[in-house]
Structure formats: C-alpha cells, structure tokens
Amino acid sequence: MFGPSQQELQKGMSDRSDEQLRAVLLSPSGEYTDDALNAARDEIRRRGMDPSQWVPVAGTPTAIKEGGRQRQNFILKWIWPALPDEPSARSAIKGGFWACIFVVVANTAIGVYALEENQKVGGYYDAWALVDAALFAIIAWRLWKNSRTWSVIGLILWTLELIDKLRNATATFGVITILLFLAFLNAARGTFILHRLRLVKRA
Image 1 (cartoon, helix red, strand yellow):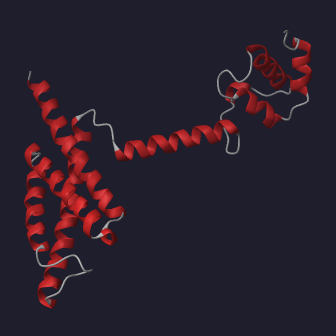
Image 2: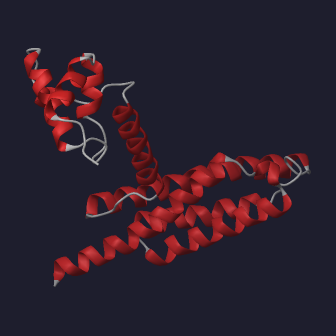
C-alpha cells in the first residue's frame, strides 16, 4: 500500500492549528513518518515560525509524557539516589545521621513518658524505648565517622523494628517509618561507596 503523497501531507498539515503542529513535531519517535514531519516543519515555517524553538508545553501529549517520566525519575532518585562521588555519599550518610537523631529524640520522649506514667504509649511503646534511643545515639555518632559496620547495624535494627511494627502494631507503621528506613538504607550505601572511593583515590 502507498502512503499519502507529499501534496496530501502538506494539505493535511495546513488544516492543523499551531498547537496541533507542535504536537506533531514533539510526538514520540516513530509516531509520524519523516515525510509527515517535514510537511509539518514546512507548514510551520510558512506561517513565519521557527520549529527549532518549540519545546513541550503543558497539555500536549509529549509534555504530559515527559512530565510523567520526570516525576518517575525524581521518585527513583529520592528512593535510590545515585552516589557517584564523595559529596553525594557523604550527603546520604548525613541523612542517616539525622534519621538517627530523630529516632533518639522521639524514643527518649516516649520512653520518659512511659516510665513516668507507668504505661505503654499507643499500646506499643514502653520504657524500653530509652534503650532504642541509646542504641541509635551510638549509631548516629558512628555514622558521623562514616562507619560501615554501624551503618549496617542501624539498618538491621530499624528493619527489625519495621517488621515488629507490621506484625504487632500496624497503627504505628506509617510514612515516617518508611522514610527512616530509606535514610538508613542509603546511609549504609553511602558508607561503603565512600570507603571504596577513598581506596581508589589512595591507589
């Protein structure tokens, strides 16, 4: 079968609005033939516009698709950030450090309250939260020193607490629990990557 002639393509493009022509030029690769794209460019130039200056705008299929891809990339980078150098690795480690500080402050407050009131907080937390606070204070200190061993200990400890929450107190499991897990996970990655980068630098 033969496709439309160049004349038919030019006629079809001349009937389209500026935004429709923009959508043609910015469409995903393979959606239009080269002849159709050339006809669209010719029509755009005939109208006194420069097709090379056009970029995706909100509302066009391409803009929506690219926006979705950017959001996906942003989420992926947030969950599993690239750590190609020492500053980015150190930044991930600091994220774990501040996660530890949050756990220390929260567990200290909960533990002190539970001890004074002699009852569990939220039906789950008790005075043993002070032990958690002490452990995470040590982990925070060692994370600041870029300790690989303690970064793994922190990740394992929080993973165990996460599992315990899911099994015994789902009401205490929420977004903060997941955010802290990601912080400990990426801090552990950061310590190992930082160690490797420094070994390479010394070689």
